[in-house]
Length: 316
Image (cartoon, rainbow, N blue to C red; front, side, top):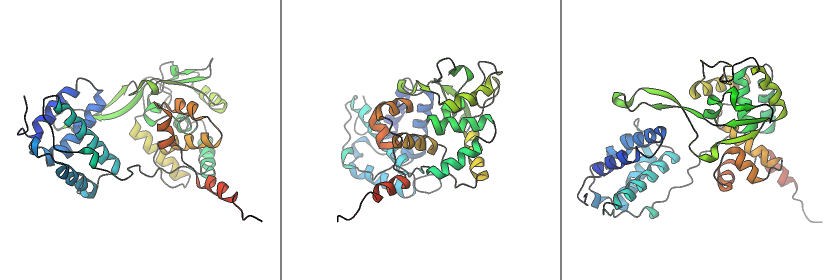
């Protein structure tokens, strides 16, 4: 049985061994990276009984001010993920009668949501005209994110067999990502994995807009198990490569660089502007509940703000 004099590192490693049996490989890799790069170097030698609120608060502030391996500040989201992991590890240790004198509820982080650029309608039209200029399959992939809200990994894993022409539906069943291969020494090697989405809600069927139905017909001669981005079964495009292709498209359009995920946010915002009910939009995006959709993905554009402000007038 562990006790308050046990070093935190021993507890963390027990937790890692336990959680590895319960989560997807990609989740374990993420947890392992946060533990190895951030938690253990600073908190590993701390005794359980010395893990006070002040110690954890100082650790959090250090990460916010210069906590990565190059001495640069970590993003608020990353620090929030680390804090969530610490809470989970301490909760696990409580099953072994170890109580930490840290009150996590007293440690507050400012709003950690990074600014996501939402395309204004004029920008969206410019990008749309470029994407529709030819039948490139990678351009089709970008359109699937911009007009159906698909995540980058979902687009990369999408196959022709997931497009049900008769019912005009697109099935989201898998996602692709590059993760560290923990079996390799040092964890420096990476590998591509294709897995089911992390939640059942992300497995979804989405009605295909008419113009995309027509565009997807370019895959008619491809085998059923062909990747949509390549039109072949033996070649795929991984997320990092697709992200770079998207950045090249933006340069060719002479548009400012944005994150690929901004396409999904733009889709959600346009849907709200067009009067989508939030429940339908939440299901299209694959969210577990409508609060995620409202809090993370629905933004008002400057164009929308101006429209609202113009309605104000001085009373006669």
